[in-house]
Image (cartoon, rainbow, N blue to C red; front, side, top):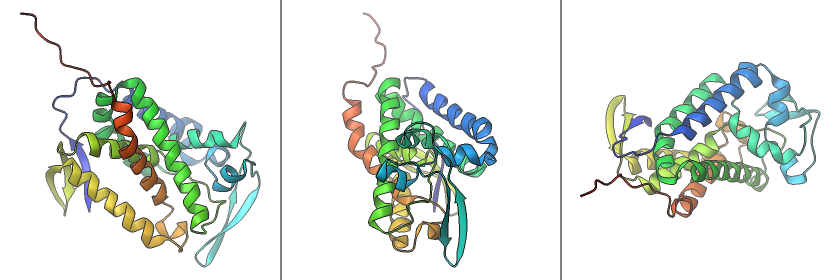
Length: 250
């Protein structure tokens, strides 16, 4: 298992204000709107429910779901406005403090370099686009593989997976500090990000047909969808956006 903890920012020309802003928004939503995870009314109103995205109809009632040999009731709440709004809002929500901290660490490590390449405006659009595509990938996979469509999903990991896909394309050889086999070391970006993606593939396809609960509630197909979207789209967003270092006059 490879766990990134930092990377080499040599050559970065821009201060990553948008990455800092996204981190701040995620923290604000979890602390003040989700009440550190205690405000279930807000959380279940704005989480993405695959059934709602497929039909366009809000499901505002308790639903029973199975987790292996156990059952649970999920108190889905009415969503103000269109249910498609949840595709955006849910990417700034989290299920627990550890969920938030893990996602924000990865965003802090990889987001600044991608923002440096794209610029703040394009980076913002890239982040939102890959996050929405990640959620849609989760919705499609839910129905494709027969998972329960009433189980809501939330979190920034789909968008961050898109950022990591962009990082792999733009910075494959940038040194990334990781914890590997209980040792602190440095590896190229393609190793750190590549091994992470391989783990997502193994986890996702090893769980197909077993239901989302088998993955501990992790929407691996959202990670895969966001990552692929990032790989495919980052060069499109990067066209003409890289800043140049200031030149001295002679």
